[in-house]
Image (tube, rainbow, N blue to C red; front, side, top):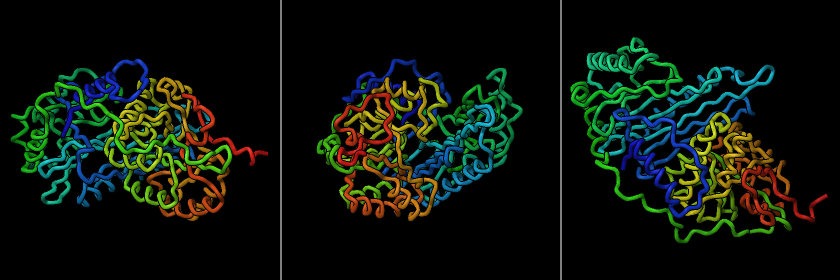
Length: 495
């Protein structure tokens, strides 16, 4: 099933209005400042409908000097596509690593962390065609700039195609460039049509709208200043179709066949509690009288989540998973299994942006959409969140409070997102844990899966019970908007 940006926005509005069986005290804010208008609206596929989809994730806070989060989807049995997306991601990460940290937000000598964020949408997943639209955002010179790259995969030939491969030859590329340039002139002052050239990198994000028109999107500052927002041009199907390669024609038809002809007349099904799920609110240990530790895992669900949960099950360990909304929406099955195993599933924002760089409306959207994705999957809207990179400011606190969310920090950092040595990660963790500790780890950590058995066995031997974050405060009420970094020590262990 595919959906357009416009349909998605309407569906979200219906969910918020109806509540969908989940109590979400969202603040009253205006809708999105802009929605891509027809005819440049692009279809996105519901990732939860793609069988065997996995999410690969990379994150790094580099001790606070740089903030990196990258993820991309991989369908089942598509190794060439996985390799291409990995290559594109690695190339971007290497370019970013060579840049000095951005200092434009603050006066010297304070260094403001720079940020890189790579997200994705699926633009087609039918008739042997799979499309992934990567959106890369970077903090550059104090401003946020986005770039786009849509990669296509032919599941019949098992070949990866760039967007320009949708065109049949160089002549078709030149014709497309001329058509796009003519339409850019109509967008008015501030747009630079003369920046258009007949080369593949210029047209690295080609898609189709619901009518079969070819949509060309451009990066910030590529043909207009970043402040002008998304710049895209639609070439009507009657003009675009003669330019398409055989594979491009297949892509157009695959997108068209998956496009709903009308929006649904009725609201989407309400999210109701899933039968058989255990409530994570029932305490497995009395943390006021015994040693407790809360293991937390950020940035999932990811390709390693299954193995992670299996390791936790071996030690009957409950944990808290702070999930990224986009990935949570793609893998509701994993979220249901987390909840059924007694873990707490909580939010980590929708796209893992540094929330302080956003305005209040955007922060509320990042948190609220994630709440909805988690609630729809598990039947429970969590009352807890963690800010990406642990960066909590007054704006974040106010938004969390308005949504009824407490904020989880940590007092033990396993550094598993930066350190690939499992022995060092395990040693750092067990040496830092004290009763009531909250440990920061990651689903996608470089050494997490190899370090976790030693962490679990060592702490279990020392008498620790593994609990969710709220269980550390079972005798208290966690307050929305308040930051919690460690639990209360058992009375027998207090100085």
